Amino acid sequence: MGVSNKNYFLLRKLHQFTGAIPLGAYLLVHLLINSYSMKGYAEFDSKVHLLESMPILIFMEIGLIYLPLIYHAVFGIWVGFISKNNPLRFPYARNWNFVLQRVTGFFLLAFLGYHAWFMRFQGTPIGEMVNSVGYADSGYAKVVAHLSTTPMLVFYALGVIATAFHFANGLWEFCIDWGVTISMKAQQLSAMVMIVVWLGISALGLYAITGFRLPALVEQAKQVQPAAAGHTHGEVF
Image: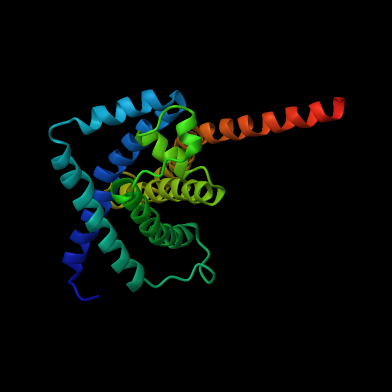
């Protein structure tokens, strides 16, 4: 293992804490802000600008997002490579959850890495579709244009569902290892609660994605209607 049992115990505790508390809180806040996409670009951008105007934002990002995320990811990668599990030979629910936690973790490395790169460093690819509905030069427009393709829409939907599972399952393990749910009955009840948490967070994330997707669907309908009208006109005459 390369570290003593005591050190591993402390490192694992810190790994669980960073995933459940700072990163879990950030996930919920992030999705709640994104859910304003359903109210349109003005409402969404106003919430984003309010958040970005906070004078201590950079310190919050470093202390509550970047550092916890880096540690959580590095330790998770290490555990993922050193762990030995065989869910086919020992098909217990906890064994499968352990495997899925590692699988979703590695997937999230790619998903979150791409998402952070796109939102922070990529330019704003606003096409004619976005400009035509009157909200160019906004963060909302950037995401709308990005999710206008089906592959990217599917990628983000899977990212949301995987993130929600990783958090809910990790929170279930956190409650066990931190002594919140000790008895078997408490752990079974906690498992049912975490299924609700997983589905609830997934629904919130997909709800937000739908808000970004609606303008593209509206624009597609606008493009179809003139063509359909012209076709009908030709048949009448």
